Image 1 (cartoon, helix red, strand yellow):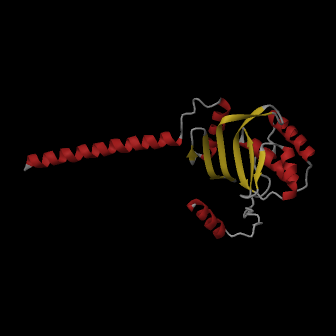
Image 2 (cartoon, one colour):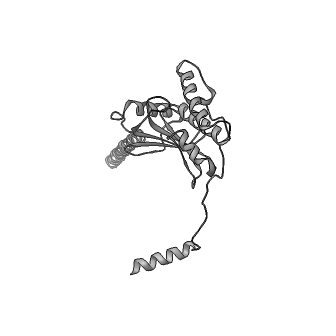
Image 3 (tube, one colour):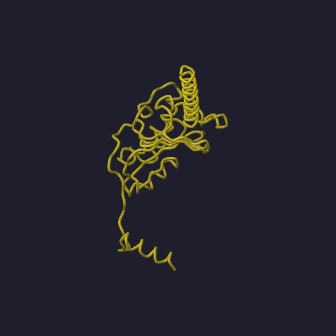
Amino acid sequence: MKNKVAIFLLILLSGLGNLSAQDNKMSKSKNAMMMPDLKNWPEASRMAVKEITDKYGKPDGITNNELIWLKKGVWKKICIDKKESKHSFPIEHTDMMQTTIHYKVPMDIMDELSKFDGSVTFDRTQGTLSARCDKEGNNFLALNLANDIIMGKKSVEEARKAYGDIVKEKMNGGNPLYMQKLTFAVQENTADADINTTGLTKEEVMKNMKKTDEK
């Protein structure tokens, strides 16, 4: 009887050991998935990842070439790309960090934003406004100036000049407010589904598509 009990305990302990090893392996695998190896990423992209990770923690999603954080701070989404984009305004640098907020850009000002900074983009349907640069502070700056244009506080030319002046201030040891945070409140209910100009309902479209597929 004692031998049977001893054998049972050995089997049980062996099983627990295997489970523990599997748990450790899964834990290591999960950690590896959450923070990929960035050795092959450009230095500027690695620095961007460090800045955001230090402030907001590990990303919520990853691909081979992109890390994504969702609903962090004022941001709806933060995306950091492995691939950099050359950008010469207001000084030579590369863009890889895109930060997005809820914001309803008025239709009559959309062209003005495009003239201001090619790395400030909007999605009218989703109701978002994004800036893509190399540091969070620079994205704060771009969006604050974009808001100034939208609110009529600055012309495009004035905003572009202010961008360069504020960047210089930062480089000279200053701490400009426009690079610390958003100076305006993030909006809500900003999506714009537009209007149906065909007169067709979604059901009618789906029905016609089904008929086409059956032919």
